Each structure stands twice: as C-alpha cells, then as structure tokens.
Length: 192
Ligand SMILES: [Fe+2]
Ligand SMILES: [Fe+2]
Image (tube, rainbow, N blue to C red; front, side, top):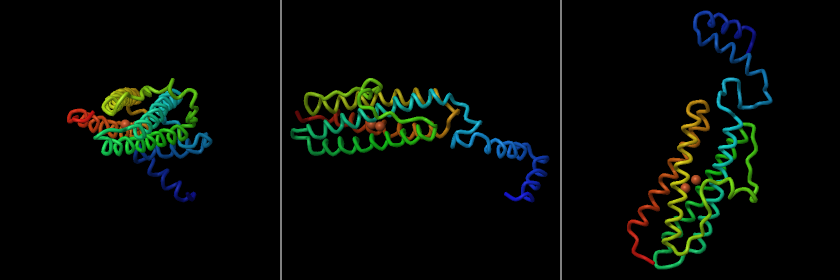
C-alpha cells in the first residue's frame, strides 16, 4: 500500500465508521504476526476450542478404525453392499479428521494423533460387533454420539469462531447422512 493510498483511506475514514475500523484493522494486523490466522478479533477461548477439536479428532480416528475393522470382517448374504458403505464411511471419517487437524494447526494448536490416548479422548466407542447387523447397529450408535457431540460443540462456539463452526457444520451434515444410511440398512434388514 503506497502512502498516497493510505491518505486516501484516511480521508474515507472520516466519512465512514467502517473505514475508521479499517485503519485499526490494518494497524492490528501488523502486531503479533506470529499468531498467523489468529487476530485480535478472535473472541473464542482458543485453548478450549483446540481441546474440543482434539476430542473430535480422536472421535473421527476411532471411527476410521471401527469402520475399517467392520469392512474387513463383514461377511454374510448382504455383506458386499454393506462392506462398500463401511469403506466409504471410513474414508469420509478420515477426511473429517484431516479437516479438524488442519484447523487445530491454524488455531496455533497441535493435533494429537497419539494412539495411546485416542480411545480415552474419543466420544464414540470402538465396538467390534458380533455379526453384520450388530456392526451396523454399533456404527449407527457411534454416528448418533458424533452428531450430538458436534451439535454441542457448534452451540458452544456460536459465532465466536465462524470458520471452525462452518467446518463442524459440514462434518455434522455428513454424520447425519451416515446415520441415515445405517438406519435405512437396519430398517430393511433381511440378512443374518
Ligand atoms: Fe466423521
Ligand atoms: Fe460418520
């Protein structure tokens, strides 16, 4: 920005309240540049948001493992079509985990992939299931847990961190799709 441009913005500042804010925004943007994407207008409790995102990350990673287990163990008359769903869900949960990990880094935190604590931190459980129907039921239970916990986190964050909120809302929408698909499978169940 040239000096000339600055003075032009300065004169606009007298005419419009937002332009006055613009000068302040520019000044603040130069302070604490080590914070990257986090600026002074970020009003959420960053530490809490990072902790909640790490809990969601653990939940997604446990879901990846559970769906993978179910994919490889599925057998029976209906196994082929359901195996494909398990695998697709596993991949989508992994993508969710990546989105969460990326946001944690943007917020200045560290995504925790430590396998020793994943299952303790995760909201959903790793349940192997006894047969194909039981696997589908346990996956539906896990999706319903994920749906409730995402909704709670979204409500907590509110409009204080709209980027995180938007990411969580997009993941929540996909968990609802997963739950709906699993529920349809159970409704029309005819296999063993
Ligand atoms: Fe997910
Ligand atoms: Fe899911």
